[in-house]
Length: 51
Image (cartoon, rainbow, N blue to C red; front, top):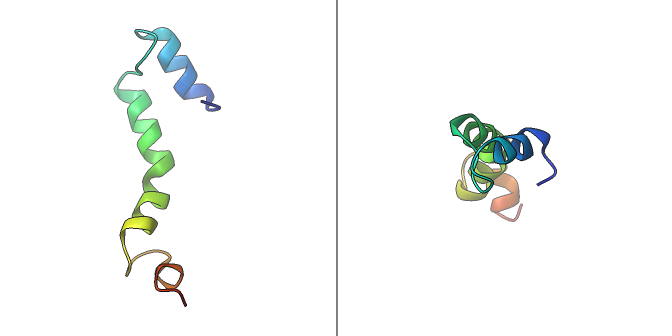
């Protein structure tokens, strides 16, 4: 909600959903943390393995 691109996309759209650019922006924000969490051998492996 704090992201200005996301808020603008919501405001300019139907009031609830961004357009494709808004979803692309969201994906760019969450991609690295999501991959770190899902991949025990990828980025952040030492944290996931408890090392």
